[in-house]
Amino acid sequence: MATNNRATLIKKVLKTLKSHYKPVEINKDRSLLEHLLYACCLENSSHPAADQVFDHLTKEYFDWNEVRVSSIRELTAVMKPLNDPKDSAVRLKRVLQSVFETHYTFDLESLKKQNIGQTVKQVDKYNGTTRFTVAFVTQNALSGHSIPINAGLLTAMHAVGVISDSEADKGSVPGLERTIPKTQGIEIGSVLHQLGVELHRNPYGTVIRKLLLDINPSCKDRLPKRPSKKAATPTPKKKATKSAAAKTAAAKTVGAKKKKATSSSKKTTKSAPTKKKTAKKKATKAQSKAAPKKKKKTTKKAVKKTTTKKKAAKKKTKTPTKRKKKTSNRKLTKRKPK
View (cartoon, rainbow, N blue to C red):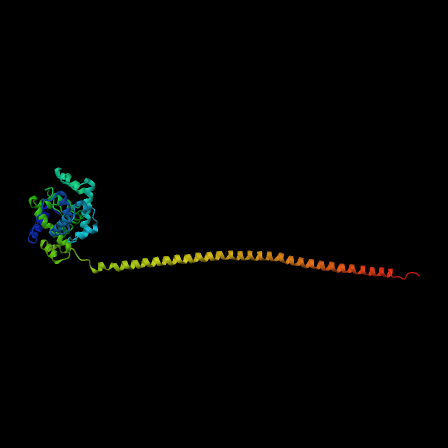
């Protein structure tokens, strides 16, 4: 977009916003670290909500080190008045941790003595900082000329046509600091911030739609739109895919069970011959054991037969002796000669 057209659009935005929002004064008595931590609370929320949360943090906690060691859950509960309490708690805790690990203190006033560019680079290096927090510190703590831009303001500028798609992806609004004088930077920055907070809070509301259409009536097609039911219907497909995945998983499990069953049957069939072999071995052992017993029996019978034969032979042999004796007796009993 040409710079002249961009400048005219930005001026029209500012003119329209002045009739809807009032500028907000920023406390200039805060230190550099306090401005940085306040920006962590303010990024997507209103000024009164950020003031309430920041005052609670400074009064209810002993020092910033106690806030640093607190859990995100506890800080989220403290930051409930904000539009994004959890994200703000994460930013705050990360910034405190990074500052402590870098300087081992929570005093950053020495950075003001450096050149603004060096200080901005140092602040940008802290973990948890964003474009908004760095710009807010540059504007309010370092007296530089930088307009803080939150996510809602970036979306509004894109919808109105001030920035293109590529510029929206980069998160920058070229020509904004050129169009706004430095002396009015804080006031106009607070007004632009209120526009971004309203869009972030309710992007589909009638208030923000009327406001953006007042700025540019031809931006209707670029306004934030609710997700249509057709776009929301892919959830059943996900369920279907999940069910299909479940079916495939079930089929795999069934296949695995079948494989296990076949493997177990194979094992049983393999183990069956071993049983037969063992049975055969047992039978052969039994036969081998039984065979000698039969031999013993036969040997016993043979011994008995031999004994009976011997007895019969003895009987046969004994009978002649008796006869001999009788004969001898008869011989002896012969009549003696007279």
